[in-house]
Amino acid sequence: MSEKKFLMGNHAIARGAAEAGATVVAGYPGTPASEIVEDYVQYPGAYVEWAANEKVATEIAIGGSLCNQRSLAVMKHNGTNVATDFIMHLNFTGVKGGMVLLSADDPGANSSQNEEDTRILVHTYGHLPVFDPSTPAEAKAMIKDAYELSEKTELCFVLRPVMRICHARSIIELEPLPDKLREPSLENDRSRYVMSAVAEPAYGGTLRPVIRHRWLNQKQEELSAIMEESPYNWIEEGEGEVGLVGCGIGYSYIKEALEIAGKKLPILKLGTLPLPRQKVIQFLRSVKKVLVYEEVEPVVARMLREIAYTEGIEVEVLGRDNFLPPEGEMSATYVLKSLGQVVPSFKDDLPFAHEPIPVPTRIRSQCVGCPYRGMLHALKTTIRKNKGIVTGDIGCHDAGSFAPMEVQSTIYCMGSSIPMAIGMAKTGIDRPIYAMIGDSTLFHNGIIGLLDAIYNQANVTVIINDNRTTAMTGFQPHPGSEVNVRGEEAPYMHIDKIASAMGAKVYYIEPYDIEATKNTFLEAAKEPGTKVVIAKAPCFLRSSRLGIKTFPERVVKVDPERCNGCKVCINDFGCPALIFKDGKVHIDEATCVHCGLCADVCKRGAIK
Ligand code: SF4
Ligand code: SF4
Ligand code: SF4
Image (cartoon, helix red, strand yellow):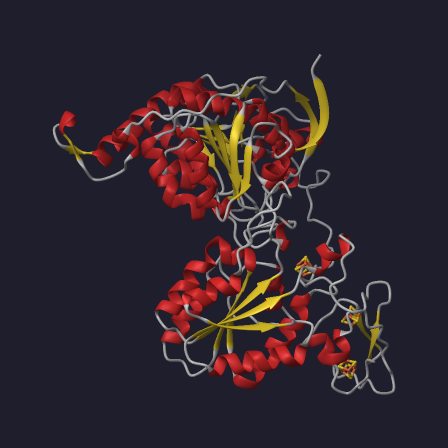
């Protein structure tokens, strides 16, 4: 009898890969996908690593695949952007051992800097097949099938769960793990794996990339036939002439909405790209109008219109580009509201089909006791004095860009702070330029920007927040953590030695010493060329969970006689344990962790 467990979607996916025998697993942390790599260390016989970035993870995975191992590369959607350069080559070469690239999308940008749709990059551009799961159990089944099909077609398969699949929990059936793993072996096939514009005599001198492109195009027919028979696509009968198309999680929202409404409409459930063309044609012919529910872009809606047009089917296709809200995350309410506008028997006042109840807006801030708060305060007062500009990067410190701190002027994507600072500095603008980046982001790809800054002699001060962990995504280790994904000791990459070897002048700051930190920021900016200021302080939250003290405790109190309500400690510092009430500041003893920094911030001596 098989075992059943209540698992998170990410753990179900890891289990599916393990049951399929994946033995090379690499990824870069990013919500909502982070738990997959962490969870995988429990499975015997597998090599698992946190890679420096997503491109590296993908390259590692195909290295394993070429040695006839099943492999997995794990990332979130904007990490897939980083890996895309390599993906646009591995699609031409194909794979040997089954390979799955997992790219988790975050519709609604619940924990991301942007919203995007992995399907466009990997399928529309890269022509790779995609599985789009509607439940955690289906995600597990899909990843297992993906390995079989990857070996059958020699193509890397992409699994694209969205956040609600990754983080949902459900009953998952466990099947046995393989009792025997494959021996690694490499067959040299340079005509495939050496990607170069070389003429191939066997093909009349056609250049190799063109031959491989042709191979990829020819594979599409094979994929279409496979998807026609796929168990992840089906039609459900219903009443009326309005059909619903549910892609991945969109199908789950449709089912939930129809259950709430107590109605039965025709449904086409889709979980694959390419689409099952014949099934689509059959469905489109059976209705007059279809609504396509998909995250995030109208990829399938546009495909359906193209099929309807070429097949001469008169059907109206309503999708996220011409009817449904084009941005944000879907839900059952989203489905009900849209149906209320199209299907007469659906009323707008159906249960749950109304606006969500307003809840207080969450303010982005660092934890109480976080070393970044002292550093950000010092930087804020520095740039107030010297008119400096700060380009920011991804990490806990990015909360410093929001009110009330408002230190960083820009935040784009991983590693962009330093190159953007170079660009600003090279305009000749007469203001000091600071770039602020965390340690994990520096190793991810910020180091290239640092190299560029030093080589091109940019007058930039690079502040590196070295807290020895990838704090924002759940404390995953990186090359500066001294441990690997299994918690085993690993070589330590010294950021200061790396920066110094590149030729940068290195400064050190203790972020709990605000005055000294400010002076270092001022001094560094006066030096010509690229300077590196390293704020070495462990993440307070992680340290406190481990019972490690990161600062000497200072129990402080507010003297109401001295507090004049100037709000400097609120607006320029913003510790969540400081409360402004009745014109005075108060300390919330329940949340204060006694770092004592607020006493250094208040120049009136009201906090002691
Ligand atoms: S998790 Fe760590 S680094 Fe991030 S805000 Fe909290 S204390 Fe600071
Ligand atoms: S505690 Fe100090 S900084 Fe804060 S409002 Fe009072 S006087 Fe101003
Ligand atoms: S001592 Fe001050 S800054 Fe530190 S946690 Fe308490 S209130 Fe916040």
